[in-house]
Length: 176
Image 1 (spheres, one colour):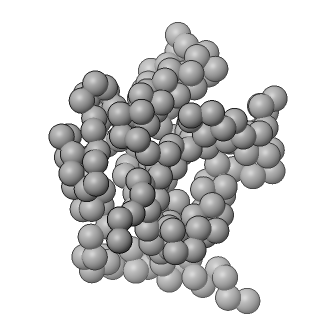
Image 2: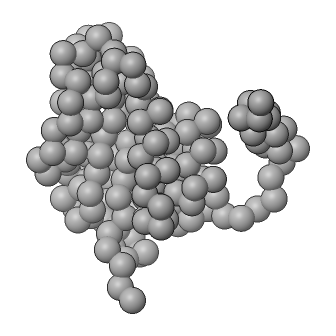
């Protein structure tokens, strides 16, 4: 059975801070535009859907734009983190075809628990910067090693004591 391309869901402001660590001279709108250009190029080169999610707080653009790149501005009461977690939960069996781009440990833990893969934003940003013209992912093989990085991120190794404690605290909150 042949499967379609993986979808990439990007924690927008998290990636922006990794792509542009000293953005003092650029407006937030310009930073978003530059990031979206890089993601659009990545999307075209890899023929895969990409969704970038921004916190909508304070934005006049609280909606989703679906053109080749799917851009989501969350409602003011919802963070991008919450949106991403709820989106992954909603995918059911398709979740294994989703890769989350975020360095937020909570997002990465939650989405991994539902079967999604993840890449830290700094690693993805490094690939976008380094390989702007060379990134190519096709059916599990690539020229940049990005797929192998995805596979190694959550590769079934035993959890550390710290991770077990974090999971225990996370699930303890849900019991009342």
